[in-house]
Image (tube, rainbow, N blue to C red):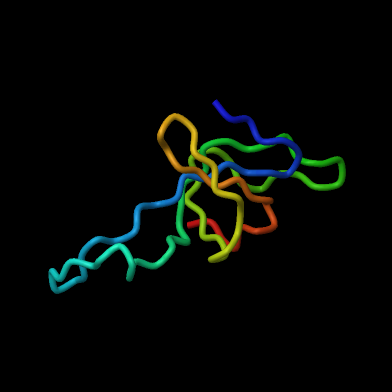
Length: 88
């Protein structure tokens, strides 16, 4: 498994919606990039900064936050804790 370093967080993004509320299918080209995900792993933090998120949290992050990584056919995002906007 991937273990983040310092103040980094490993997030599994939530899948983008494939249908609208009325049942229309959304094509891949029109899907928005998800901004919601689940925390899979958390780094130990820095000396002057403790980690506020924990494994299992559902988080909201910026649209262009993080670096996309594929591991064992799953897509993840590695981002700094400061890129996370809120926990749900």
